[in-house]
Image (cartoon, rainbow, N blue to C red; front, side, top):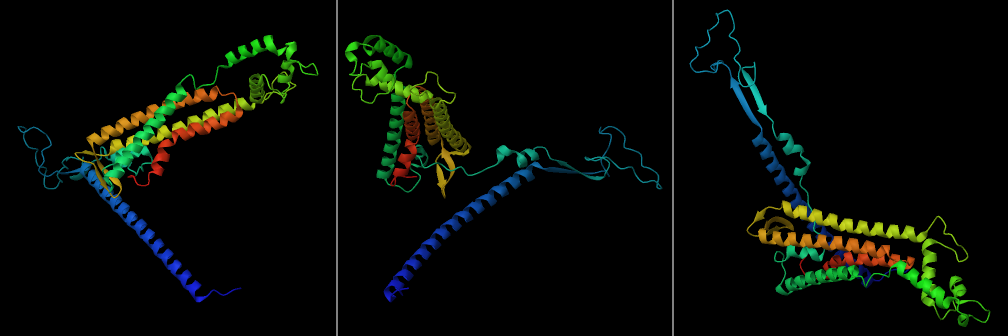
Length: 359
């Protein structure tokens, strides 16, 4: 085994020292974030304890000089003889002269109400997050302008994709029209004697048998091949089998696309719920990457952004389902499903690629 030289050992030791310093620096950052989070949780716990202690009210009733009758003009009660103990006067709590009555109304709702639980909701690294952080982080004017441009580009791209997919020219032709064209083709040129080959085989027979040497009627041959593959029909068969791969794949692609849009809508709802619970103030305050308060103008901009995201997601869901349902090629089904998911992730791609913009 070769022994490393002194220079190599020194270089390795230097690299190890640099790596150790980087690890320690990262650990110190994590430790600082944990301390800040712990302090935040302790302050929240103290605030909740103050709320609970303010709600719990205790009333102590002493029964020696408290009249039981209740009216001021009634005579006082007669004193009992010396050999009998005085009757216990009813205070605020019942028969005990030093009774303690604690009103616990609302305590359960404060302590155990699941809606009152607080948690950290992180914003995704997306172009839609720029309205939250623009003007709050340490970024120059050029970077802020670049972030606004990326936000507008993201909006334009998703709106353009939505309009293109919803347009009737983009969708494939109706299968009923294609069937009518195929019937006309069969009545006209499919059995014409001028289209017979040297073996006297008609053009319709060559198309139905999947002849790869065809130079005419290739559109009809492609349509028939796509139909056979979609329903799982063999070349020499007349009835499809029970298992139809095209139908199953179409259902799976539509389900996958629906789940992708559901994930987008769920993230929109969570982000809006988090922003809605942030206190309003004259200015927006961001401290240690935590949004403490939100200005009313920025809140309105964020609401408009979430409404626009919801509209785009729902429109893409409807147009995508229609597009996938009208696709007759199995290969194009998979490609179309991946393309739709890529359209939905344009904002994340732009947010990840903007290395100089605020995040």
